[in-house]
Image 1 (spheres, rainbow, N blue to C red):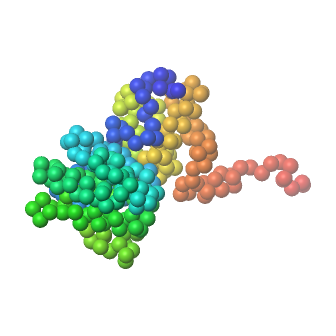
Image 2: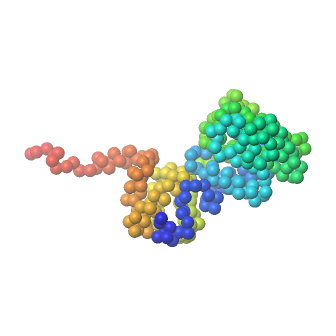
Length: 295
């Protein structure tokens, strides 16, 4: 709606993960490098964790793009609320296994055949699982068993990447998953952006959308956006998108603190110090004259 008004080629703050808009902060560069290294080195299990909205799915999308460019076979489990039967069906579908997708036994035979064939050709096969913290215990156990598919000369035949919220780490610490935990050789995590990173993040997205040297978000507004979103990229996107819409409605090409206050209320944002600040503002308001004592 506001793209033409601000001169954007496309929406700079789309909430859908888009590798083209990846902000390459040091931690995101390191996480992506670890994912690629883990796959190439046949490490077996790699775990990526981070709070909601820190960019885990974007990392997986970047890894998918890389795997496709390398003509690497992979299966991507994007819905982790599944049974073991559905899990094997999704693997068979993604890898185009020539077998009955309803039969776990046939899927395993076909998968093993594919993995060996790929390994003989010097290639690997990858299983990506997003939202892995939601996986049932029995599905996690099946994933562990898939990690046993290996060859003395070829190493691990299936590379498995599990991405999820910090609950995934706590889940993997459970005694009944200690065998799976021992097989994890690489771990990486994503944290909220620091202030400087958040400012670079916003500027980077605006530049990629067609607005270099932006003046839409003043520095004081950017600092306050970081505070109110706590550096969570997904929240930053949502706030900035709403701010642009608000500015467009007012026919202004510059956002303001007043607009941010309105957006914060609409989005029901909560951040450290918000209640104390609101209480201080309320206390500073002068008492109406009709409440003043009569002389």
